[in-house]
Image (cartoon, rainbow over all chains, first blue to last red):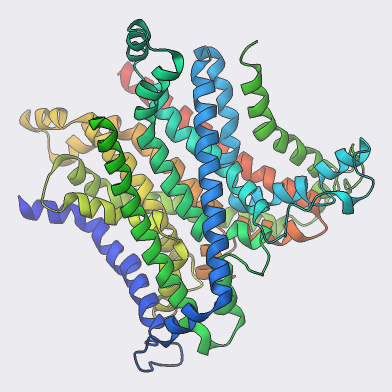
Length: 287
Length: 260
């Protein structure tokens, strides 16, 4: 019985340990100064100490967190609103939602390219504004990209994230038992009350999972920041890339230390967020 | 038309970009401040003149992405069955841990793994790329298959076993047909994840494994926007064609079984 379970899990556990765990272990070891390309040194946490004192790393962390937060929040809200709007449509019309798959299929690199095409100072939106006489030169177009605020990256993540959230939330919504709502309405609840006490609680789990996935993806992603970001302050992933590929090998442990901290943050975030969401859910039910 | 706003928003968000891409692909010289492009098809001509790097990149990307789908399927089919039907202490924790590769930044483990791959000779090879892509992709396949098994239940399999079917026969003739939709769903996501990835192929493949994302990348910032747009459209077309083929295949398979 017991052996059957272990045998059944082996095809996954073996590669999981050999690739994922071993990769992580090596990242951790190198951050401590072990198993480096130039040989092992002594175990030391000096690279973590340098990181804590580094002003630039704090700015990068702030940028990564804010881009992740705003893009994930916007995606979940946008996806929920779109899902609700599609849900209200007659089923034959609902099929128009299929166009959102464009955002799911296009790779992040391509979405970043689209944002460049549309929103750069010589992009299509600037052309439209120029032709309509709202601006008279490209310089007057408000700079959206490369400002250090991460706005361009957030827009690109939104284009990928909204359809993703729509997919997860729509899956729950379109399988929803309409009689629950009819009952609530018959018992005298208004549309807002029905939404708050009947529809929303059932959507929340999907909204929470979409948020966790999108937040952590944006937090650690590389492709979009590499195209749309700037080097200062630069997302954490770009900083790691710079240290890893453009500086000498002696700085390698620092890149690995950033990665280790990113991993710990991501794992803790996923765990604590889940707990927190479950706690909120239980608390609401008690009310 | 009370639904018009929704349709307009959807079209604005997702159709407009495609239209822009099509126009830009047909008119590489289209730039500020012209509002309407002048069609030249230089991008197409460029591609027709030098098709080899394009085709190599596309074939390589398709090859490693489809292999990744097969590898993740092989990795997760038995574990998904265990996770769906068995209960054991620590199961929730294990499920959480198994989802981690899709949640934590891929950089965190792949950069350490890169060093190991250099030591064992997997760096700069297609198998190395497939292995690392399987790691970030399998959680989607595992989730899809676990859900598929849970929805299916084990009654059919138990019944077939009782009637004397071998384990292999039960899997091939009883479970597989019912699992196909879940497999197709998982496979679509894993394919998209692998086909879209730029960084991991660049890191582990080290430039010797051609990728379609890698082919697009330098075009984005270059002056040849038309070619970039053209390539992006291919990015859209390839998965759509594959999904249609998959959908038709499933439909025909089910019809054939029904007829028998």
